[in-house]
Image 1 (cartoon, rainbow, N blue to C red):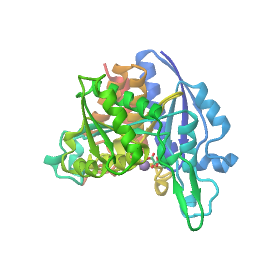
Image 2: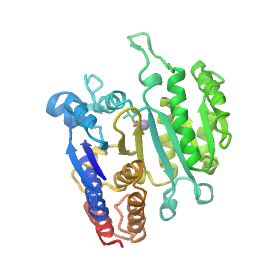
Image 3: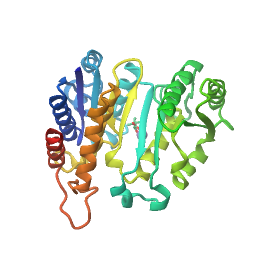
Image 4: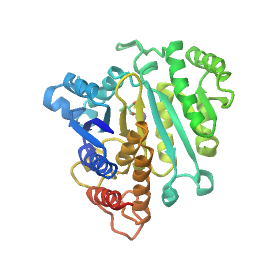
Length: 354
Ligand code: IPM
Ligand code: MN
């Protein structure tokens, strides 16, 4: 297969982990006889510094003309500490989502047996948890009409039937490929927008009789996720709730540094780690590259390269087994490996796999 991949390293540890994701894809291409081309582009603080815009037009064009985007992270402390900043790296991420029409954000929450002790939850509660959160990504309060005055401010949580329906389709399709259980998370006891979600979901449920649909208020879902995470298979929710719940999801597995995500929609899909840019570790070669590498696996799987994706996942699991791990997940008493050591071990594994 020929694939053209835009590479957006961004800020902080982004460039270091980005390299590892690209190297893994190169190894996979070689092994399976594919042809992957890579085109770099600026995003986030790196783009603000270079051209004054966190998602420049040129980056947009590059995303458009490639088949997929391998994204790393944006964010820089220089902007976090400056409430007056006119442009922020995060705006680049939001602009990318909106301009590429990336309405579906897919964030799997998986546990890894060898890392379960790092979970803040008891082993018997979290063991085997395996669910996917599908977060609506281009609507709701993030993009609704806003006003920001000195004495009054508001954000509008607007959703149209069309927006709700298309994200529910993505969620139902995921549920069909998994354990056929969909939980629609909302706040229908209070919010009109949530009641629209619920109405549309109830109408659609009859089209998917093989999927069990249930409804849960977001406050209850937040609680259920820590009490009984195995309850969930696929959950779907609006932008803001999804932002909050996926952060919760990313820590309960104990494997934050391992969680990838995909954002798909009307144009080029984007694959990125769930963790942020960790500016404090920039350039130190200590960041965990596994979430980026697993994002590359999601990219491969998106294009139906299932064996290729599986080999990447196998290589990652093998690196954990071999304790070739960065400091955040290394076993006590063992020396942590660097970002590039972990990456090189994984590409070696792929190169030498039979
Ligand atoms: C995320 C992030 C972003 C969001 C920020 C950086 C704008 O928290 O991808 O979850 O809120 O969507
Ligand atoms: Mn978030």
